[in-house]
Image (cartoon, rainbow, N blue to C red; front, side, top):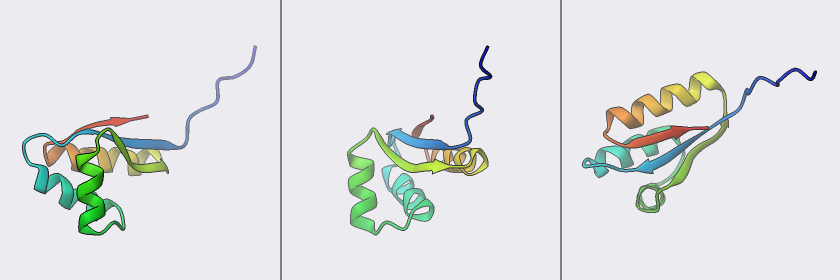
Length: 76
């Protein structure tokens, strides 16, 4: 039997901005190097990946920050 490979790269997917869209945009800008317009477009176009192929710790931290701002997030 083959051993199941441990996943070491994760994507953080923004699935909804929630009530506090401006807060979510600020968090997206902190997590990425996007400008204001690009971050707003990403938040408006959900579901969209915020971070791709990052370590589990970074993905969890990003997801926590986005959830704290009121967004709904998926880590894959």
